[in-house]
Image (cartoon, rainbow, N blue to C red; front, top):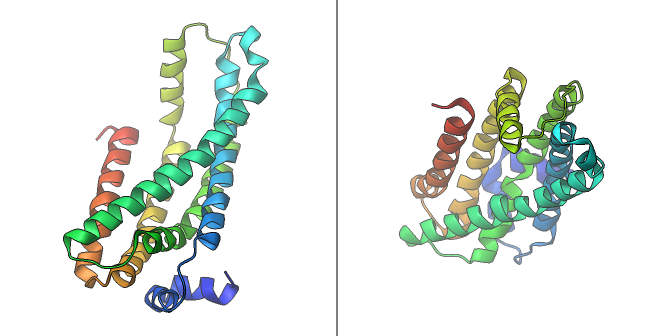
Length: 215
């Protein structure tokens, strides 16, 4: 994906996706986009896991590297499942409600292109995680319930809530790209494409707001 194509995606997404419709379906570049997103998310997960390690008993703290590695790999896997497979399937099924055409492979392709803003979001969030979590100094806790309570309190910090707010703004940016993508991929009207994308995205935002702000 060249520089000009990236500029087109940002400034003129409808033309970007319309041009992609003239080409053969391909998941090579989309997979690389998700992999990049997964790596960034994995780094963030490894940083967060460093806090969990601090709260573990001394005999378990030696497994810090393993825990960070597991968090890194799990984050990459979750990106492919939660951020690519599930949205793609939901958009594909909802497009069928509006008699949309087009293949699920094309849906996966266009959903991935719409994920490009999430790479930037992940980089910003990882930077915030690094600044915040590396400044924490915690004592070991033996009670697993207390560890969970401590982590919940940590996640309510203003800095981490700011990171969550930033991620939601980038989700809306991705959603705007997905609307054009689904419109082209499934030959939908702009209104029906907005509904196709809007329902899952709205549910995700509501879930995130309730989880992090308790609204």
